Length: 522
Ligand code: MSP
Image (cartoon, rainbow, N blue to C red; front, side):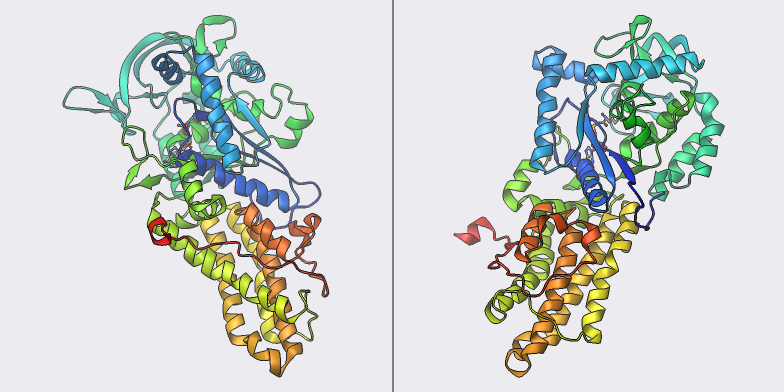
């Protein structure tokens, strides 16, 4: 379970994003899952953990095969092209993933086939025939009771995807036999599914009874062949979920990577794919004698104009457009601050500008600018020498010190918005402190006290900037440069060091410019 204790020794942290279907160009919803993981990965690294952060692309299945057909290219060429877009997204968004997996890679085919063998050897897979409903868009099987019949007679899944009737020979996984063991597993691991509301949904779904799961298809070819029966290809979800163990060396379970990083600490997923991760995946793993992951967290939808983003609705927001307009770090901050993580939420230009000009420019940026320029003018551009600290000075420094345990706790529960709120509350304290201490008035009356106040502000800013790094790495690196904090002293282990009086400081430069509407700027 996530803890608010400092990690001891070489603690490790393995975090994964969903792997993305390559039938689409990346949009801001895709960037959202990975951004959340990136912030956690950066946070854990700064907190002294050995991190493995995985993302990648999900390249098999009927949906991708169909997209390739409509693009008029063979599936491999198609997936090579589209997968590249997701790699570009990673560099555009400043993601710090340690690996990028593609399910068409050899290491993955070997791993998925090995998992199949393990399941078959354990007697968990049998040959039968499937007749029922399948929605290609969701790559999911549905019971008739889960579907709605439209006026035109089409069968539609709760996600809106159309289901078609399928009849074919198929291997089945004995999921029905896992109901009690899954329920016992959820009971013994209360933090396995977050947020709690989603956990309850999954538990009631499993309590409602589980049917055996069809895990192979025969009516198309684009997938990993079932070992010893190549007329069948593996069900794309069994194939895709396996990526999480492939990347740490499966089937070499005695490898350094597997022993170090498995079980994963966190699979981050959108709420639409929770069932696959919280029901099927732990059942597959337990059936194969592999430990399940520690936690799966389902985030909500980012909605634009009240609707889920999709190509057909024409309301897709592209990360590149947002970044060009507002800058990368403000976009990263906004996405995690605006919408309580776990819930659905609206994003809009108005609220974006409000956050940039309010939280970033006014509250954080101006705080820094105000006292850094005073230090330039009045303290010889050097970290001032503090005198004795007053109760107010101590209160501010203590508030900044209390943030790390608080952030460990909030981020341990993926509550990014609450973590950021806590940081901004200390930024608010610091702004009130400047107003109350009025260092500009002390310049003539009590220059020693002025030096102390400016020192306390610089020291507070150092602590804040260190802690904000996971969310806005580039802006915080510039802020720490302005405080002349050496590059090798920017980990959370350095929080309890202090600025050295007399250290020269460069000329301050604004880190968070205000957003001005283009027409108003002319
Ligand atoms: N390939 C599967 C995942 C396999 S994981 C072993 C898949 N891919 S996906 O490309 O369709 O979606 C990937 C992720 O993007 C999901 O977590 C989904 O919830 C997320 N999002 C897609 N659109 C979104 C929004 N508009 N808002 C937030 N996240 C959304 O499912």
